[in-house]
View (cartoon, rainbow, N blue to C red):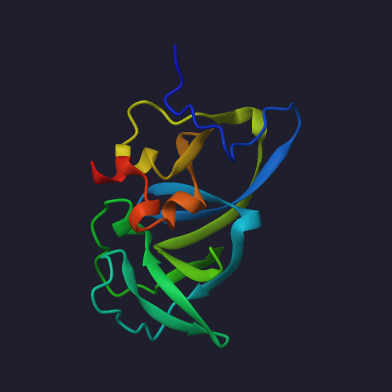
Length: 166
């Protein structure tokens, strides 16, 4: 049997006893994890300024403590429908290529310390758009935690994985 995701770059090592910390976020009922060493802030995104001709994932720009931050809708990036209602725009602050980004999510969960030996490659049935931005999964009690690849999530244009077009 062959693993669905043979890209091992950036995946946790399988050494027994080692753990990795993840900040969890929710999009609807789906649970995603971001490596904690990539997360700079958690904040409420307000006063977004539209960016003309930007990709649909870009919801706008905002000022966070004097720094311009690009607000990226993780729902749109993953091909999910926009959230209904007037909920708060929770955001997780990340950096990529010297630029600041805020991933807009439905809810920020907890920090989870997970054993690296519970890490698994992406399931073969995982949607191709999700597989292109995921490093793998952890099975939790009755749930699947999808570990996001920050570089792939924040890649645009020529940097973006080809599988996202599916």
